[in-house]
Image (tube, rainbow, N blue to C red; front, side, top):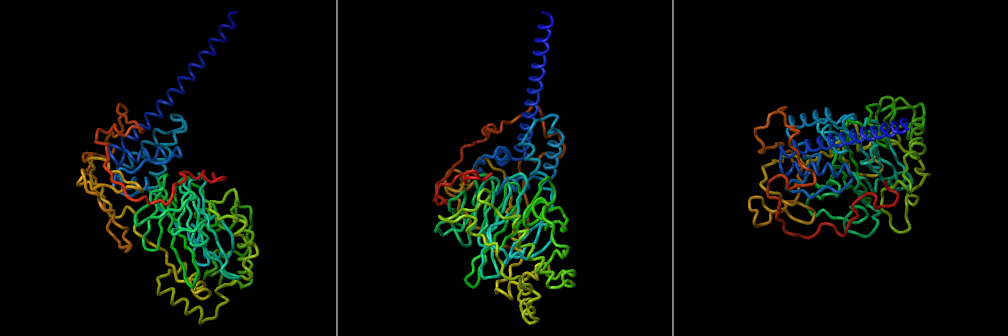
Length: 517
């Protein structure tokens, strides 16, 4: 009998101990999150609150709250405007207090730490342009005249993915006619051709057409779309970006793609643009390195010294490997595609494995053709790294040169003045003039298409007595993420309605399309 009592006593004690440990973890997690939110609102009561709530929503794969300020920025862009000293303090606090021993699966703090790290990171670019020519994140360049839908780039966390549709323009040339992407949970498509339905806009969000109407469009999960000249700029809420240049000449409609990612961090990338590991030697090994390229490895089909010494036959053998074995590894399927399709079409409809019929190279052009094309490319400002691809496009298809676009960042010239009250800023409302909160709508200015260089500056007028490392995290204070009224400010925004920008209701998540993850 004593043994039975002792057994139940020990079992009860273990249950209590486990419960106490769980409660402690919950308390620690709550304390960490509250202190993070407090630090953000201490920087800016209105913008910081939106930032903390947005990161919480992103970590839970939910729609971010409406912006309560005039700036048309993503969470990453807003965070990057925080003074460096504050970002460093916040980063150090999370790294110190968000260890697995203290906090179990704190996705909010972990995601915010990722965004903070990104603000200190350098970036690298990958490209798919012309008919098309690709440059990997590790600067390996190659021709890819194939037909079908392919993974251009994707991250292992499932929040970043870009797919390209390449369609034939003749027996031997193809172009990017559509791009589909996962922008942190929003499925976005750009259709230079082959739109899933008749519509004046090339953009489709979660299966429905949208229009920008001259201003930044806010995606449900924190990303944005801007139109600057001929460039559509898609920004992920975590900081990655893509520029779509809507090209076209001689009756051909196509799109050039420039993708920017961060060079540090824990993300693992894969796809036609490589793995971004600073090693171009393994960019053509295929998915999971299960394909072995031919022994000939020039890593550039344009002007590389190794290429110049190799025979044309060897070059074409390598191009054949890229368009067959390598391409097959990165084709999308009906279960993985992000594209929208018109009735009677699917990814197989856009696939032609026999393409191209013949592999053509710059070496197949005569000297005059190469010289004339080179002059045109140099006049348009094409750099040496993309000169071979430009010569190819000019000579064979008369495609206009497409230098790497360099539009100004969305944060360029932004001044964060102190806000006395929230100003609701959504896709379907104009913001009110903060100088006249009781009336008078502020006209939303069209995006500057001149792409002039503007000196960047930030002005922070809130909490001017802040000192770096001056104990900005106070455990005795807390702020609840889901209660915006805790900031002791007038949180009743004034808005006036305007015409909706979206053509029809959208499905807010990427899971709205069957088979998407």
